[in-house]
Amino acid sequence: MDHQERYEEYLHLAKAEGFTKEYLTLLGKLGRFDQAVSVAQAEMTKLTEAKALAETLREQNQHDQALNIALKGFQLENDNHYGAFDFAIWTSELAAGLGRDDEALEVRIIAFKLKPSFKDYQKIRQITEERAGEEGWSITRTSLLNYLQTYTEWGVEKAKVDIFLYEERVEDAIATVSDLRSYDGQLIMRVMDVAIASHSQWVIDNARPRAESIMDEGKAQYYNHAVEWLKRVKAAYQIKDLPGLVTTRSW
Image (cartoon, rainbow, N blue to C red; front, side, top):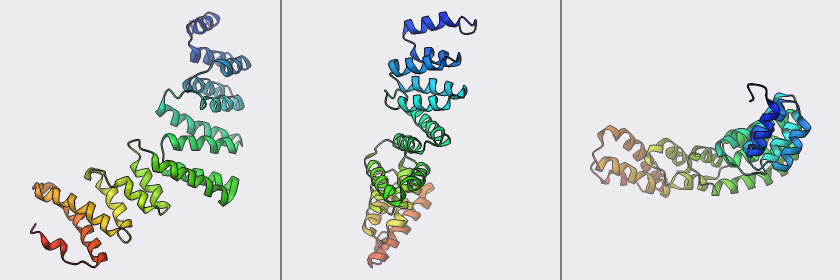
């Protein structure tokens, strides 16, 4: 019907079948903006519906209405987690472009909570300090770090380490990497290199078993990794002033 420009029939069918996203999108494309917004405010239940209409409104240069619908969307059911992150960034940038900095900050924080990243953390700091100074950033910083401590979704370990080390939260960085597999060795070693002065025993307890596992299983192709772990064990013992322990095994 859309291709045949049978728009009214399309709208009636979409509404009758509960295809809210399609219904709202066509209203927007037809330039019936006030109707689209009115229906959206009353009938939208999902973020994807708001996303579709907001993008359509922006294409039609209805920027303020697009932003209002987008913001409404984040109060609705999030039926697409990964799409929600991209849409949050989109919404934040739209708000910033319209000079609506409070909304830009609000949605940037939503994006961060959906998928933490060091880039967004820095962006939030920049916007907050511009709006509320160092005191405002101090409050937001505490909130974000507390959130990050409890965030357990897989795949953001590097972001967590980047942020925790940037904020000199060494124990939080340690907690992030302690149980990671040696596959993530570069990230673990990065934390060890920062933590070795203050948490040398943790370095020993974490690095030594990784080296021993490689050597005991005769994984010759990974001996270079064992050497890297042992370098950190040796450095940690030197800090603890307990020399010679690394040579107690005849590897």
